[in-house]
Image 1 (cartoon, rainbow, N blue to C red):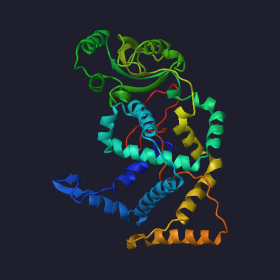
Image 2: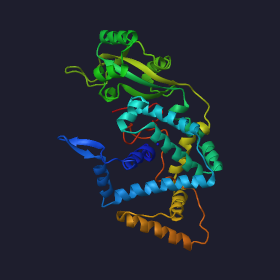
Image 3: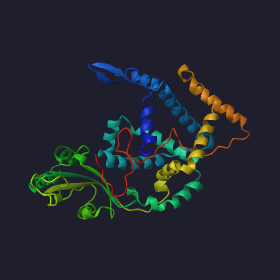
Image 4: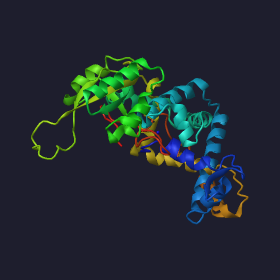
Length: 372
């Protein structure tokens, strides 16, 4: 899901993804026709920061194994339905942030739906292990007002726009979009829109929440919330926010431009429930300072109780750290397992910071417009 950006799920995911199932013959780049292989890339990552990069990646993989083993020992499972709910939520934030459908975004990032599903499953398992139901419910009740501010908990839309200079041009574009079965709004916006901030995302503006748009956008709000998913508006006048032309005073009214908007998805209002916001609550709890120490202790204890063999001499220092934890735990009369934040597994299905890319999508503020 900042970690405050799907850093737990996607940035860390991409980091470790390079070492999973790698093939020596896989070419990741070519330099003047000479290949750089995935194996070479991974070897470089392993040696990065005097080997620390590889140690962090290996430790992350170990902790993920330990989480799954602990869940199996306690009889904790994750259903396909639970994973699918998180995946669907992620798709909305990918669309609003990147301006791309989920399949295109996966292709751009090199991820797969199966891989993300596996990571989401691990995130849910972790939360079930470390967050007691009572604490989860109490935190939900305490933060209901905060949840009301999130776009997906309100009537909202995800929309695009294309901006052109004149009304005749806008009318011609509208006719093309309305009558042609092959007209692609995102492509047209990328090719023709005068808005440099959204052009690279196919005109994607992101989320708009009903009743939360700025006073200057009241007319736009009426239009947006009158449209259904997939519908486009008539041409709408738009005052330019750019500097006035030479010879025009600063206080004079700017010339009109024109825009057409398309609602990609219209989200209906719904009751705010713990089940519908489970990933948000988990993420907030694990980021809350009052939980940090006990959460970290859980993972320290998980590592300390594990028997891990380090066969590669490059990871002897990591092995010594695990041995030291085990020795310290053995000196403790009765170590008490406590909840912990998944320093390795973490992340949520809906994210909070930065546009999608290696770091993933974020959860935008209410009424926020996407930019650059």
